[in-house]
Length: 90
Image (cartoon, rainbow, N blue to C red):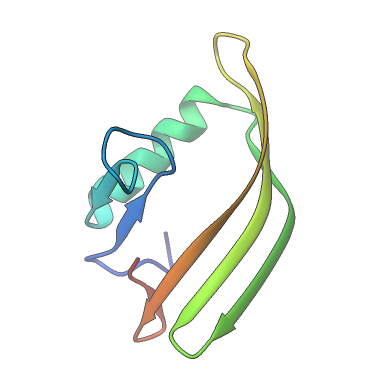
C-alpha cells in the first residue's frame, strides 16, 4: 500500500459489474487486501514480471494459496496500473 495513492482504484477480475468489483479509495483497497490475506493465509504471488512505460505499468503473476475452507488456488493473472505522481492510482 506504500505505493498506492489516496484516491486509488482496485478492480477485481470477478464480480457482478463489467469491470468485476471496484474498490475505491486507499482505505477500501487496503481493507480488501487484508480480507484476501485473511481468507487465504498462505497466499503467494510467484513468477512475477513487471514493467512500466510512461504512466502505465503491468504486473504478471501466478497467485497460489489455500482458502480457509480448504480450496486450493493456482491462477495466472496480470494487473494493469495507471501511475500518477509516482504512485499507483488505478
